[in-house]
Image (cartoon, rainbow, N blue to C red; front, side):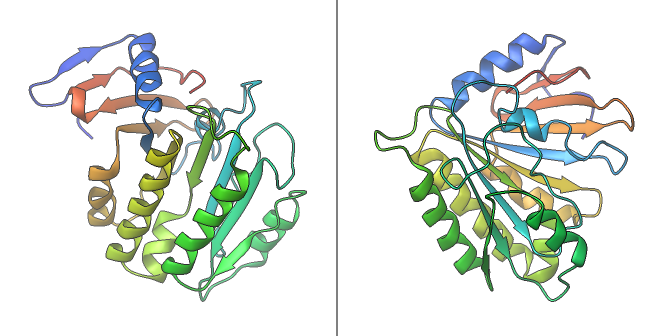
Length: 230
């Protein structure tokens, strides 16, 4: 993405974006996380999941079974009351992906054979995670990983449709969802996701990741800065 949104404003203040994101979370918010290949795998993700927050978070992780890395590193309890995992079966299941899932106590996944089944599993997982008195704003956190793998296993239209289903869940429950894309994700597939997004976060750097935020609706783009807890 360019350094400046056309016709927009520039802000170097992390507080500006934290405040805007907090406002977005009150009615549901989706974030596209665009990762450089050299960026640490979990930088930004844990913060968007509320890893450093003492509040009760309910988390849903969505992956393909061919994922070679797991996002399941967030701190906190590991049980089916607070976390669920939904996976899409592909034709290239790897031992690494299997081991990554089995290494996380309490995170036994559901495995769907198509995106419709994956969407149904995601809805059921959110229903199971919902507290008896409903979700507080920002309590539900959804991480969609391996978008490139999902596109390869299905097609861009099916992947875009699934992300739209996730967007509906986020809106219905005033949650915070984020979707990971990397340089390997087809550009057209990544562009097709933008209408579902409230914010775009670029993650770059090898040892110490840098973050830059874009808020399309507000025509705001930030400088590079360390991402604070979302």
